[in-house]
Length: 422
Ligand SMILES: Cc1ncc(COP(=O)(O)O)c(C=O)c1O
Image 1 (cartoon, rainbow, N blue to C red):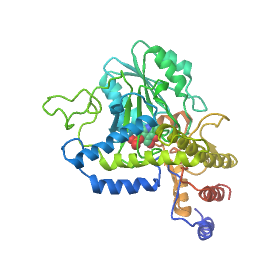
Image 2 (cartoon, rainbow, N blue to C red; image 1 turned 180 degrees about the vertical axis):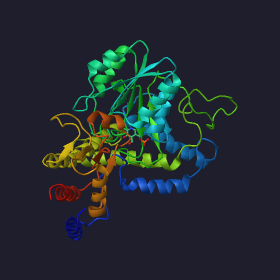
Image 3 (cartoon, rainbow, N blue to C red; image 1 turned 135 degrees about the vertical axis):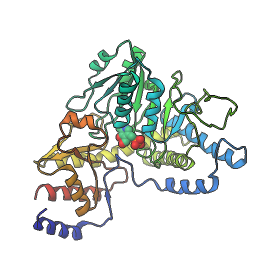
Image 4 (tube, rainbow, N blue to C red; image 1 turned 60 degrees about the horizontal axis):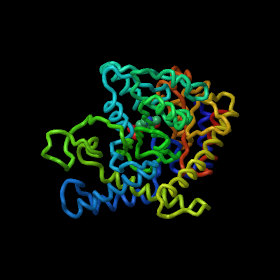
């Protein structure tokens, strides 16, 4: 940067920066979390930081009850009317996807994924292809980021075991039509695995659409902490165990129990992580009651959360649309994908700048304006390949969240104008 530009930024800094950070990296993890999440994690870990499901004492039983009620809330949250024990806790979406893919696919099977997928899908599939005799088809999205459902359907062969769908892209925010995809997978008797890392908590997801395995992460739209995630496994779908160990039940058995959740949950679960999700679920339900003018049954967790999720999505999209419209007016900005009126997106968008590498742009936003964004390939190299942004070192991703304030967006837009339209 030239001295004159640096001086300009220094002047701006004193004029506009009132916060330590302007956080626009919610696609990586949402931050901050709702206050009750921090409070309950702290209090429950202090009062019940014991090993649940192992010892028969009161504290362990109470800790287990908190876990059971979190499974139930999450089952309702995802409109799952099967056994809540089929809501299985994992470490994160990556863990869930590894468990789903490795627990399902065997030598000779065929799987369909897409260029929209995150490395949490691409890498396990690449390993299964290279080392496990699994064949994979990678679907290409169109210029808007949508998958062609005719191509998806014609890609299904007799050997196709599963289709993995990236519900929303962590790079361009495009949302795939799960209901339409589920009708195709059901018609062909193929298992539908959904990666909801970018949508759980932001868009309503209904297992009854025909989702067989829903994978989720706790630390993004579900407002939990890092280190907790999960799977919802539909009735009739059986994932093989891919890790084995203690469960606190049936210890005499030489093998992993077949019943859920122990079939997939080996070892001690994260009490602080589940407590975080538990408090977040209650926060969603309370938020739903607060933000809707509709008469809601307080006791209906699913209905209350649904209203909250709609409100969260609307709030976030208000910010994202402002940012998109602003960037569209800057000549040297190339936005990835297109926005089509009436179509669903999540509040994540990426762009590159003709004469500034993505990482340098992110560094300037951080150093000069205290704005946190993420530059690079966002662990999704294929979508950058599809949009031709790999050679430039990727793109700059901006992801406002529910706690983003209008003045934060004002600050971001000012910064972008000053950096890109000097
Ligand atoms: C679409 C998508 N899938 C999977 C993941 C992996 O999530 P986690 O890091 O919580 O395992 C992410 C994280 O960014 C993601 O955006």
